[in-house]
Image 1 (cartoon, rainbow, N blue to C red):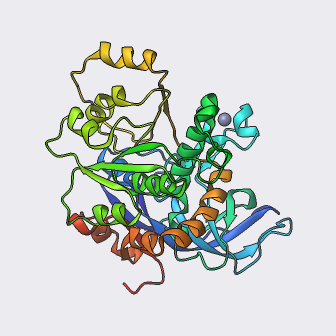
Image 2: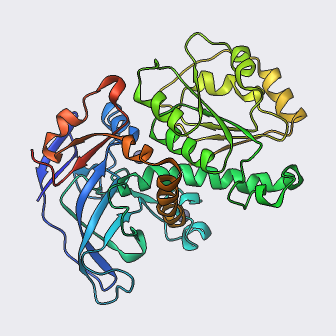
Length: 376
Ligand SMILES: [Zn+2]
Ligand SMILES: [Zn+2]
């Protein structure tokens, strides 16, 4: 079978013929890849030449966002059968730390984890893969066409679930039972700011809106961009950040109770820290590469953090529980906002057209996916 990935000694993506995997233990499952999404991490790995091959190999199959169909199950597999649609998780725990041993490999303490398509294990830009049952989440009927978004949504799910947990420190701020952090409309009465409207920012916006938070999204694109259209369809407000100062942004939206950073634009991200409302929570998910020197008023940032009880945290990766919640929320989002999420997938390519798939596509681009059933 063929696979697309990174090779030792060559620049950019290459296609290779690799052996089709087979089940080696009782709890394993053979999955045929139906769709796989391209993400900023893939682009960064190509651009920055980040290659973390499986031990003893000189090739890494890229891709960590996938949806597939179960072909064969081992005799010990209990919850899946051939024909089921599944999404695989990404991280494989270190097997040593308390977090990994308790289903929270996203919080791994040793850093010795592996990640499919990223660190030391092959990913999903290929035809088949084998994995343990515990790393596969079953897709409910009727959601197969959105399921490739489960992995990026799970990243936003983790960030939002961290946020809701942290809000437990000021419980009485939600005056009504139905707006407590654990309730469905937990965001009611809160103002949220999302920085960056890539897939993670936009899916985060969808979750904030699902929780009924008044949500503003800052980006640096014109009205014609698909991102702006989708922000509005989710009932959020668009802030065109081009040429705006921090003061302009506060004048437009007030002081946010929640900031979800999903751009990795460090200057903007840091300069917006002091605008957080009292007892606000700031969650960072964007990962900037390279170096960027910025000049900021450090005293202002620290002063506001202390005086206003600000919480600033980072959130990376997601565990199986976040995938399961994401699948549940895909259905809720479709019920609430109609076909908005279907529009997040803007381009589809056959895997062998990978060069074309990775080309930038301007204002019509959001999520590009490989669709294995598509004609080349
Ligand atoms: Zn990704
Ligand atoms: Zn660990």
